[in-house]
Amino acid sequence: MLVVLFVVFGGTLVGTGATVVLTTGAVAPRVAAVVAFAVYLCFTVGVSGASYRYAVRRYRTYTLE
View 1: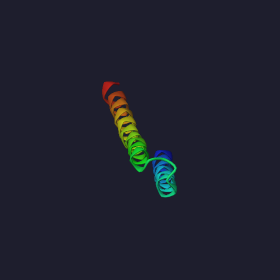
View 2 (view 1 turned 60 degrees about the horizontal axis):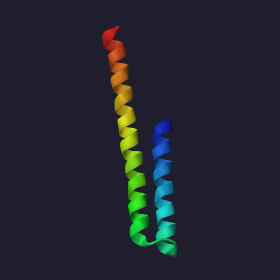
View 3 (view 1 turned 135 degrees about the vertical axis):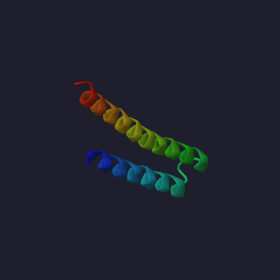
């Protein structure tokens, strides 16, 4: 549950930050969009990878004991 909250709040913060930066013109839109997309991918890939490693580790403890 904490992982889900982390991903949801993280994605919300990234989206909100990207919206503010893009609408105020603080940074070039292309740079802001690339950075926001990279952070989004880090959240997505990081959680998927961590979940996979956790599942494999749990499976191995059950099958090897």
